[in-house]
Length: 311
Ligand code: CP
Ligand code: NVA
Image (cartoon, rainbow, N blue to C red; front, side, top):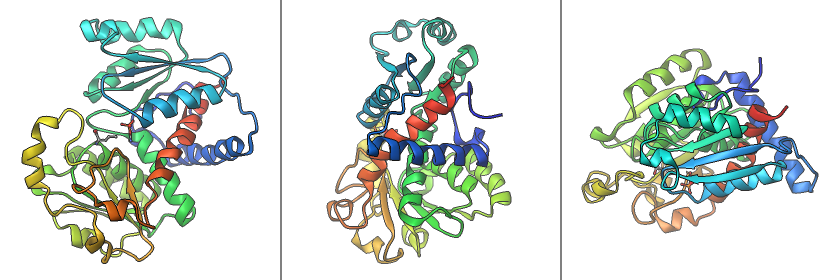
């Protein structure tokens, strides 16, 4: 029982109780940090942070979070690791397990993270793959709860844009907590079919309503949260021009805000491309909570690390 010693690879792997355990503990740790109360739950522990892709929020929030918990984080760029020169993931996993208490990884292939977790005997945390971004989705739901209250049942999150890692993790978490989710993407950019099936299966018990559309206005109707992310994720930079054409109209702007609820939260995992997936006036407007989401990455990841790694 409990999360101790487990990996954090996908929200799909978590029970609803485990999700709320993380969210509740996030609240406790956030309050302690704001009050200046010590909470050194990982004193003497170390976290290795493998990055095969760029990052601002993830790197800084994990590193600072580990420090605040009394531990230490090591930034391990794949450019400098032997893994970048072909050392097998399974060997890297076993070597790092001899030194560290936990591994955080941001990479391309989700299978690589699963292999790392299989061979490591310490917790592995997924800090973004091409398939999933579970830490971000946890921070987003925590932010939604802060602004809209504990019970998200009957509330609706609308995601407009690319059917990418971000929406995949949002599908998982909305289905788990019983929040409705409507997704609008261009037809060739729909979310992963297996993830949609998984979410639909979970929704049968939680009561969440899942809708996949190609009409942003229909998806945004009466939404409590409007969410978007970049049209071209890391690794897709070469498709930027073609995606700009395909995604025209899949933008959060003042016009789409009219069909959502008046008090709808505007969310974006960041970094944002103003004028593409979101307009400057909306991301800077009164409904935007994008910097709360970014801050909550710190608090939610501290909760995850403490629950997985503390003695
Ligand atoms: N949202 C997010 O993961 O940001 P970074 O890419 O800056 O880590
Ligand atoms: N979907 C984006 C998220 C960045 C935090 C990407 O993968 O690049």
